[in-house]
Image 1 (cartoon, rainbow, N blue to C red):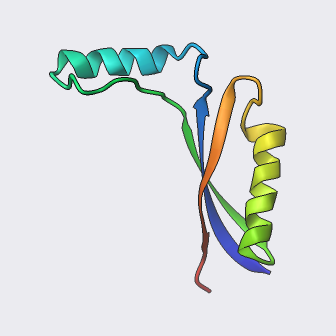
Image 2 (cartoon, rainbow, N blue to C red):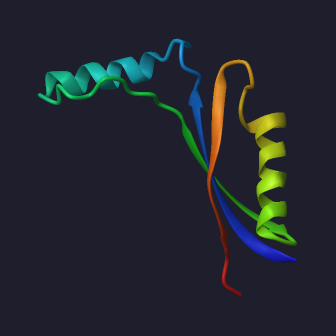
Amino acid sequence: MSRFLVSVHIVPRKGILDPQGTAVATALHSLGFDGVRDARIGRHVVLDINATTASDARQAVRQMCERLLANPVTEDFEISSVEAEGK
């Protein structure tokens, strides 16, 4: 078994009301950042897991997201990185 750090981004689905994202976009506009078209506020989760391979680690985290970490009705997730941890 090897140790992997897996990073996951979880955000509200497009079309789902995101009051925090709306507030951030509005605040950025008021600060002069007129180029901001939208803001989505979500969660960044880093998991430290044991797995045989990076592919196995990715698959395990995908299952974790589908079963617990992300609400499949209102949220999307993206596994952004799977990094082997040094021994």
